Length: 222
Image (cartoon, rainbow, N blue to C red; front, side):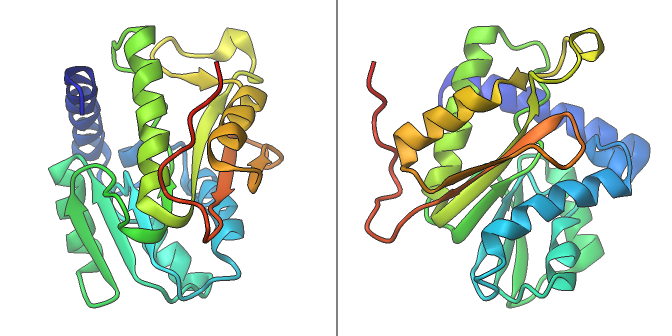
């Protein structure tokens, strides 16, 4: 991890710790508008997991662990690991959900080979003063970390440049969906789905990694 990544993570850690302190273990505490929109985001990742209910899941940037009960309600039985760079979030998740043989929470970023599938929801949105160059590098390294963490596949969401320009916030990152899709196909193969039909100004990208494919991304041709 580079020094720029460390400074970005420090800023993200501070931001979300403050949100949690202000709003508690609610959607506002992880910077979502409400429960409906939070669960709508959760639902997009079920497509990646639906046919593999016993697969293990790494929830990167898990916050207070709201994805865990959502998964269980949807019938998912596999081991769940939540990780977050904010210690306060990890502590809150443990208080709410406890820990057992089928679920646990750890402090830190994504861990290579940690689970069958890795999920990153809302972890590439809040810029917190980083330069465009540093943030672009951070986004790229985060996606690569998700790819290394999920041996069968991974998914993430990002705010979309298809949103209304006059309503975008300067402290948030907006990505171009077709460009992100093309980059992931070039790096990780053709088993990629882009979802942008669920009513929010964002998109979700799901990647399945064939058994014959290594977790390391392929280089992109210049």
